[in-house]
Length: 533
Image 1 (cartoon, helix red, strand yellow):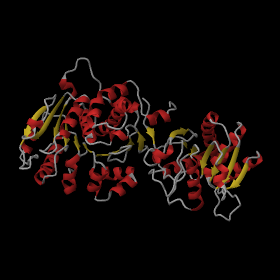
Image 2 (cartoon, rainbow, N blue to C red):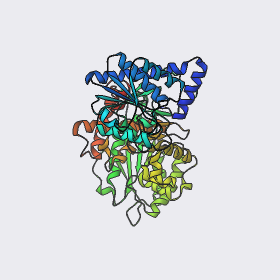
Image 3 (cartoon, rainbow, N blue to C red):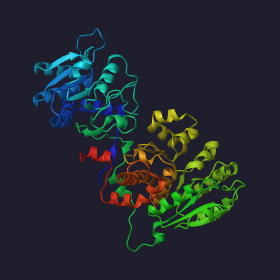
Image 4 (cartoon, rainbow, N blue to C red):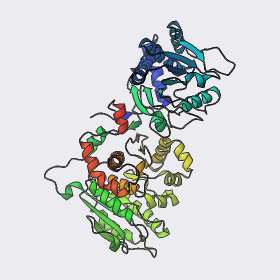
């Protein structure tokens, strides 16, 4: 099995590099820069061969700039006409002084090879207008403040040209940990990153600006401590998917109860329940208010009528019915279409305690999340088998902060919530983040913009619930459930295009997604990283 792909934070990567350089001694930092620069040069040269012409290598004064000098050197040796531009400290600064010994040495080598080197000046836009390609080696990782001055104007000038850009390690201006644009950022065609994948390259908006991403192995060791951020892979999903023995029956694959629905919202319950069955659960009971049941379609689910409020939502008295049915069930889906009725919220609080006591795994979604946000003390302290599946607005209610604060750093937001509630948290959205209470985070590579449609989250809750019913542990069910969900969306988009996809299309495509995963299919991002695109 191919392991999950490690995603390294900037601080951990720098600590790993520093420790490795110290252990190796000598000029190992120079060796790392050489390996990194050559790797980026090989990718750039491959692109250049398809569209030859002059190349501009735009460098900062730090180690990212030093990488750029190495790239320029190899391109020169391989026959590409190269010119280097260095971003000055100020408009009046005409001296090119690098900030490290390694970058200074590579600048000297470039000079000795006769490569033209100048500072970025007022005529920069004109000088690069005829280039076939631009190498971005200005800022790299670790930006912690907005890009200003010469760097910002240079980034803006490069973006305005529409010339293909190869970003060295990271598009300049992208926060390597969050993916946020720090004032201004390069839009790259490809990004060649070093050592390990960075979260900022697979979280938006950085993911959209990075283009195709590949990782150059620069010889760093595996860290001694456990990694805590991963990119989920198709290989991991395949390894976790439950087997389907030939001598099976419906009891083999478990049962799940979907609790939700109200007089005004009951389509979500059907989507979620059918998705659980599509994922392989042997049986699904759909428990909804009694007046709702007659309006539900004749389908493969078992329907269970629940006592209801005057508004047609689940009443507190339904707890007795659920307690009896829970004994027979392997997993619970709670919340789709449930409404925000005050009595229904009290039911949610009570049933959470009941589910936790039973030890059954549970998905908490939609209005059940809103009920928790009314009084987070009602969430069970022994709810480690629970999976919360909020979108950013729902998580902002749970964490009592703003959506912008949630989106500013999605990895940290999900991780903080998982620690707070002691369970797995799925922060939905493009490149969904799945966080475990122990701090482990998975970033999902599957899915597309066509999945931004009503009911898509209900399909996800059903997929995760269906996996739980088959005995997949809660966290693993959440991780691969998100992967399967996105793959189903990708299957539909390949057939229909992204516009016009509805949640029912995704639910119907779940079996095909499972089949493709079992046959070895991977996401587009994985194919880039594996060199298959």
